[in-house]
Image (cartoon, rainbow, N blue to C red):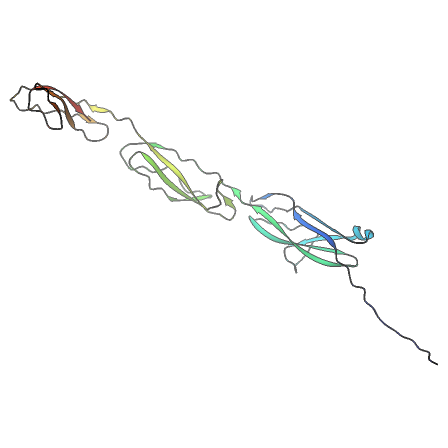
Length: 239
C-alpha cells in the first residue's frame, strides 16, 4: 500500500591521535647565532595502516605558520613552540612544547693585588663589552676591598656560579715590609743632667716614637715614653 524512498545522513567524526609526545632533545647555549632546536615527536593511531601518514609540523604560534623544519631561535630563554600533528581521518592537534636556550657562562675576571704604598689604590680593571665596573673604591691600608661588576647583557650571559647580573670580586692590598730609611739612636746621660734627646730616625712608612724600658738602680721596673730620671739601666725602643 506504500512505496517510496527514505533518505538519511550520518556523520563519521575524526578520531583523536593517541600517545602524543613532543620534546626538545638537544642542549642549546647562546652564542649570538640562530640555533635550531632538535625535537622528538611521536603519536599513534588505532589503525596501524595510518601510522605512516602522521605528519609533524612546527611553529612558534598555535595559529601561525607551520613547517616541517623546527624554527630557529637566537636569544637565551625558555620558549613555547607548537607541533601540529595531522593524519588522515584524525583530528589535527597543535601540541605545545618547550624550547630552552641556556645563557652563555661569562668568565669572571681576575683582579691583581697591589702592595701597600701609603697611597689610595684601586684595582686595575676597566669596563668591557661584557661587563661594566660599578664600584671600585679601593683603599689605602692593607686589606681586601670589593670590586662590583655588572653584566651588560644579562639576558644572554651569566656568571659561572650565579644568575645574578652583578658579581663582586676582591681587590687585595698586601702589606709591604717597612724599613728604616735613617737609623734611630740615643746616647746615655748622667743622673741629674737633662735627658739626651733621642734621634727617632725615619721609616719608609709612618712616624716614629721612642719608649724606654728598664730598671732603676733601686730595682724598680720602668716603662714609659718619657725619658727616665733615675739612674739605672734602660733600653730605648724605636718604632
